[in-house]
Length: 202
Image (cartoon, rainbow, N blue to C red; front, side, top):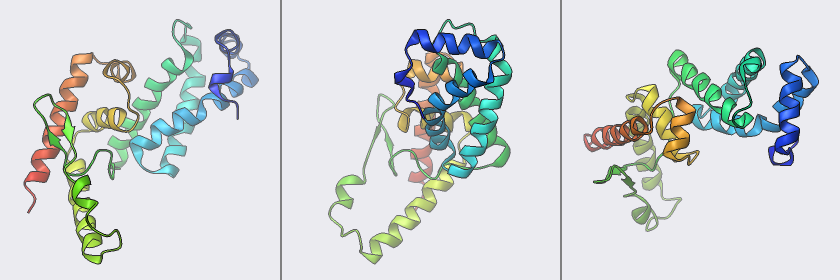
């Protein structure tokens, strides 16, 4: 499978043009070159490899169907990733599949809307095979998953893109087709919501 980095901008533009003209072989080359980055994005949102593979098939069918609308004014990946993000969000909404985790458990919201990890220091002091720690971790994960389930899909999407994909606010905005300020607002409210939900737990 070719690495997207191995395709020069000129070579990629030529492949895109051929694909727009109906060349399935050229489209196949594009798909193979960009499949893994798209898959990593989708699986980071769905947390389910099998579902991610299914969604990726839908994504590439959509890309093939609409590639004629791609004008080449941006990178091919910049055009494909928002399609992938929307498909993943649609899947979450329709199948009710929740993230098992994507930010450190028991995150706190700082004054700037950022999160701080309260667990790492304490966890280092306990042996990883301690049965009590395993039980507590299982209970914590269950509470965290319940808190995640209460988030709207649009908030989970922003968190996944930020905390797993490590995208910038501008990149998230481009992926979701929203304003940068909206990204910041959703991220802040999602983190605050989780902190409040987890704070309510005994």
